[in-house]
Every structure is written in C-alpha cells, then in structure tokens.
Image (cartoon, rainbow, N blue to C red):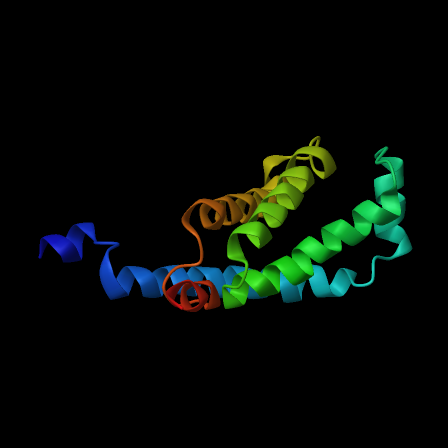
Length: 137
C-alpha cells in the first residue's frame, strides 16, 4: 500500500516511466519543433539576426539540429547525454533570449523542455535505450 501511495522509482516501473518520458519528449521535440524548421528559413535566420546573434545562419542550423537530431537521438536513447546537453542549451536560449521579454506562458514550453533535457543530461537514457545496450557490451 505504501508503494502505491508514495511510489517507487526503482525497478522496471521506474525504468519504463523514464523511457516513456524520453521517447515522448524526444519525438515531440524532433518532429513537432525541429522538423518544421528544417531547413532553417529566412524567418528564423532573420529573427536571430535581429536579436544580434553572430553568424545567424550557423546558429539557426545549430538550433534546428539540436531540436531535430537531438530530439530523435533522445527518443531512441542514443548519445543521450550529449543530445540532451545541446537540447538544454537551445531551450535555455529560447526561454531566456528569444522569449525573455514575453510573459511566462510564452516561456513555459521552452523551460519545460529545458528541464526535461537537463534531467536526461544528469540521469542518462535509462535501461530501455541504445546507450544501455552499448554499455552492456
């Protein structure tokens, strides 16, 4: 009864929950946010230029790459920590720089993805991942 009320993150259920979060966050980031921006268009490049980013075309490609490729890598759990680092940086820039003057509701999605990415940066992909499979060999 105690486990039912207060939970337990150890074992198969915790591993499964971590995998569900990783797959969902990675897929939504990659397909809903990264893919529509691929390749980076003039609107994205122009926005980065207007914000004063040096080399706006390069930064546009890095942001789209982090969202698309990083999201898909996170989804399958391959090179999870490096992918999550790039996603976390991209989402922090989106929240603080791109939406810095906006109300919280505009920053919320970027912050949510930042903290999910930060979690996977620290924790890794988990048991149900390619990273885990490679580590076992």
